[in-house]
Image (cartoon, rainbow over all chains, first blue to last red; front, side, top):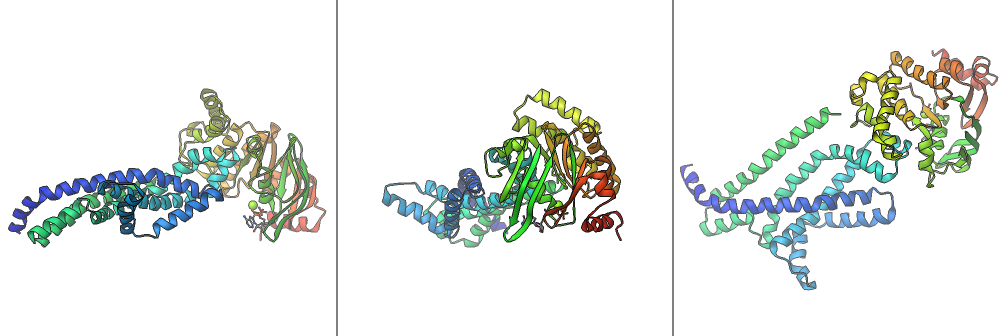
Length: 218
Length: 243
Ligand SMILES: Nc1ncnc2c1ncn2[C@@H]1O[C@H](COP(=O)(O)OP(=O)(O)OP(=O)(O)O)[C@@H](O)[C@H]1O
Ligand SMILES: [Mg+2]
């Protein structure tokens, strides 16, 4: 235990650098996936087949491909068609692309979960679809969607470790490099796991809290 | 004001309305009665395009109702609807519920709309509940807010689909009272209801719908006191003397 603490103080500064990158990748990917995710959801629930069908196919395709493969594709294949990206950029884009589809499905489920009576009430006072979306459906879908959206965030945080395969030096990657140079696998990967938990546990607690609060507000 | 001409409506193979002819004149109160599944809600919902119909014609004033057309939004601002389950917006206060349509659909000025909404809520006896959210109101109070919301559009007519059916018995009266006062002011109303007493007192005429056709019609007192048709007699016996 004493040696664990002594070694930790040696490794932590390096791992913390990785942690910051993990947070940066996660936050950027979240920002870049939320608006597209909402867009996919709106297109899919638009009731216009010309918009809904292509979106559905796109979302299903992306959801059917492992994140690793998407990351490889963006990092290694895109340069061949002239789009050079840094590993960091490719990682953020790959995660954002994938998660826009997950988040899109979450939003779609939320929109579809709004009571039909609400839609009829909105229609019956003459609301057209965009106004109804903005004033009636989205505010209610938002409440329904908050807990699963927070869950997506936790998943995204964990999945951000996948960008290590294209050599983004986030937390998992830093851990792996440290471990292979010091052979101190136990201490290092324990620290890595603990650092992830330092982020995911508060997020999960926050999510639980939100669920309770929203549950009461109904 | 509202006219049905040979209206047919099917859900897939299932024909629900089989040629409805009827007219609701301006200022008239017409009650639509009939057994469960006879097509009452469907008929009502065709008027403001919540359902489509396949054959015949429904007109509101001079406008033909076409649920897929552009004019449907205009119809809906002219003909309000009150639902069995109230369908208030749960994330908005009573006042905001009432203001929603005039403010965002009709684009009227906020100060004016607010004054009108407050007056309407006062009129339905809810002056004290202006800032209450729907989940803190009783069923009867919610339905009165819903009626105020319908009135806020200054509609030419209001459709009611069993407005008291989801209420506890002790709250039915307060909602019927509001509807009665609307009738006294000659609001045009088409009301689906099982409240036979209300229909007898308030309605100008009654339509008895069974199996997708209007089996009997006439002045409310006549149809409800001395029904001619056997099916009407049966139905009225069952709703007034439930076993
Ligand atoms: N969306 C729908 N899809 C398929 N069938 C439907 C739909 N809505 C109603 N129906 C059917 O149409 C018929 C008439 O329904 P409607 O709701 O108009 O009856 P109602 O007279 O209002 O009955 P209730 O007194 O129970 O409200 C019923 O047989 C019902 O099952
Ligand atoms: Mg009905």
